[in-house]
Every structure is written in structure tokens, then in C-alpha cells.
Length: 588
Image (cartoon, rainbow, N blue to C red; front, side, top):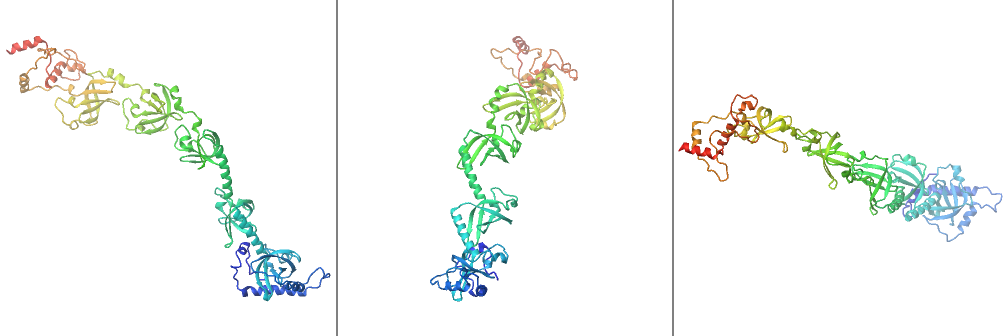
């Protein structure tokens, strides 16, 4: 017999009295054939040995016709009693004038053989059926057992959906995008995203297993049932999270496993909830990425900083369980102490050195060398390098520690005044030319300034025109200030003074003398007296050539040299009163 009915419970459940619009002619012929076949078989059936116990088909039809007023409508789910099992179906008394027929293909969804189908029901069995078609004038009533079961299953599924109750199903197979299970005999689908809270790589492991699920979407018209295991897991997890959050309090110590490490911190599983350890709370020390401190799978102890029960957030700290190194820094380290550390950072203004985790000091760029100022700290130190430094200043309240690198080496400026006393002639390379003078390196890293007034007797408007960087220049040391680290040099002092012209001599004589101020020593006339000027070591009667080691052929007394210099500047030397009186008498 050709199967004209839906083959699945889901499809069966979609049909209602309003939606079953099959043409009568389409189903009449096979249904009539089934009825005629069953009725003919009933008429031809041999008489039973005990007619009182068994009823013939004819007697059953007559009894059914006698039941006046009984009405059977399409779409009903009713109960009946099996009266006969034929070759095409099963005759069932449903209280109408004629028996209804259940075709074999409407008995069950299971793929059974014909013999097994015939043995499913026996005369006298009570069965619940779904009325598929009613045609009393033609003595035709078509019934379906599997559709009755499907209708019953759908009613149960709708009830479960409305109540929101979880159910257990057996996963039958894995399909594209999820899993298939049967709920009350109705095919249902579990999307892959609803199998677990986290993505499952292989769904095959769920096939054949019984899992709890919840109906999340239902459409009987479309025969659609969507299940979710994830919803139940999330509900259970939410309850457990609430319990954990209720127990947690700020200040409590907890232990958990690191489940994720990100750029901004690490997540630690505390059971039903994950707590965040921000990167600033991982360690007192410095690091580039949190992975340098913790790794996934590590079991760590932490302190609860805060609990937000509404947003379900817990902030943790590992470093809060260890003392702040700055609290004991003043006790451990003192000014002048030599310490060792590791360079952990370089900036344009200095280098940061980690003495211990969380305790860093700064070596300023000016404290890296006695004689040179590097353009960048990387010219002296490299990141990751172990260095020795001296504690210059420590301020635990401000969390500042100043270190010095040059203090670990001898200070060359302390020995410089003895090494180069004023009047020492040296040669060095020009390291810089400016508008106010020329810088000359007298030894490695130590530079002195030749002021523009000490370059030559003649005024030099632009030093860059006469002096070039890298040239050698012979100069004389005027003064060394070891405290301020300054060296004053002169080139002019090594040059012979220019011979004054007659006009200059006359102008000098005509220049009016300054009157003696009260309380001041009267000017002295007569032979000049050698003077000791700042920055120049002089000797009475010693010529310049002998003073500088005999390298110069010029024989000039230092006193005369500076006396001329002062005269050129318009200054008069002070002398004794007697010398001034003698000079006035000679002029008179």
C-alpha cells in the first residue's frame, strides 16, 4: 500500500484539521482499497471454533452501525479497540457505524517488517489513534497510530516548553552544525553553540550519551524543536557563582589556577567564577608581559581586592601578599653604599636599575661619567646589563632612589689642578667653536674654554673663520675649577704682545691721570712690578720662555705683559705717593 501520510512524528504533528487539505480523490482510492481488503478478509475469515468468544467482521460492522449518534471527526485523537488484523491494516472500533482502518505505514515510525507490523496489535487491544479521514457515506475512516503518538508527544513537549522544565535526551547522531536527539519520539536539534559553555572541538564524543537539555525554541507548525544544554550549564554556573561571590570578601586570601593570560593581566579560576589579576598587581618588579610572571595552568595564591556582586567581578592581587620593598629600603640601603643591579629601562634622561623586585633606582645621564655627557644613556649602558652604582639619595615616601655610576670610578677633576697648574702649556684638539670662544680638549673627556678675549690681541669678530673643529691648538692654562668642572685657557698669553706705534705712545702720554681716591693706595711710577694675576703663576724677573719650559723664543716679563694689557684696557696701576710726586716734578 502506497504511503500517502507523513513519515516522521514532526511532520505528523504539523497537520491539523485546518491544514489537512488533501484532495479526497487523492487518498480515497488506496484507503478504500485498504477498507475493502480488510472487510473482504473479514467476510472470508473461517468460523472460529468458539464463535461466542470471537466476533466476525460482519457482526462487528452491524454492531458499529447500531451505535447511533456516535460521531468521529477528522483531527481527533480517540481510543478504540482492535477487532481484526488484515493484510493491509488493522480494523479498529472507534464507536462509529464502521470500523476505522489503520494502514500498516501508520502504525509506527520504526522500520519493521510486514510480519512484525502484523504482530504489533491483536484483536481486543486498546489503542489510541488519530483520525486522518472520515467518509461515512462510503464507509471509510482512516486512522493513524503513529500520528496519535506524535500528537501526544507534541502535547507533552509543549507542556515541558511552557513550564521550562529540563529533560534528558539520548543523542542519536552528529550532523552539520550540531547534534540530533529524539524528544518523546520527535526529532530535535541541538546547535553546536548550545552543546557547552565553551566551544567543543569534536561533537562526536556526545553521540550515544544521555544529556540534560532545555527546550529553547518550539514550532509545531514547522515541526521544529531546538534544544540547549548550554542554558542549563549557565544556570547552574550562575547559582554557583552567586554562592562563591557570597563567600568572598575584600582582604581574603584565595587560591586558584591561571586559566588565561592577556596583555592587561591574568584570569584565575576560583571555582564557578574567574578573578582578574591586573598586570599592576602581579608583581612589585618590572616586566614586559604578564606571561613573564605567570603562565596558564599555574596555581597561585592571591588576595581579594574588591568584589562586585552585581557585575560578578572579582579583582585579585598577588603582590599584595608580599611586603612593599620601599618600606624597608631606607633600612637596607644608605647614601654612599655601593649596590649591584640590572638595567631594566633606558630613557633620554637616564637609566633605571632594578636592585630588587619592585625597587628601582635612576642613574641620571649626568651621573654616568666624570668627563663626558653622553647623548643617550645607551652610549654607556645596555638594557639587561649588570652594573654597580653608588646610592646618592633615597626617598621612600616619594619612592625615589638616585644612583651614580661615575662615583664608582676615581674623579679626575680632583687631580686636575695639580696635574695642570695655572701657566701650564698644553696642546689639544678643538672640539667646538662658538661665538664666544673655542673649546679645546686637554685630555680625554676634559675640555677647556678659550674665551674670545683670550684668542688673540686683536679682536676676532668670528672665531669660526680662524679656527676649525679638529685642529690642534696650543694654549696655556689660566684656571681650573674642580668644583664646577671648568677649565679656563688662553691662546693670547702665548703670543708676543704687539709693538705700540708712536701715535699710540703719544696717545698714552696724553691720557689724563685719574685722581687718587681717598683710602686707596696712590699710583706707583717708575719700574713696573710683576704681579700675580689669577690663573697665572708668575716669578719676579722670569721671562715667559723660561716659564713655559723654554719652548718660546720670546723674552717678555709677565709683569710687563699684564701691565700693557691693563693699560690697553684704560686702567692705571696704583703706585706709591712718592713715585707720583717724582713724576709730577719731572713734568714740571
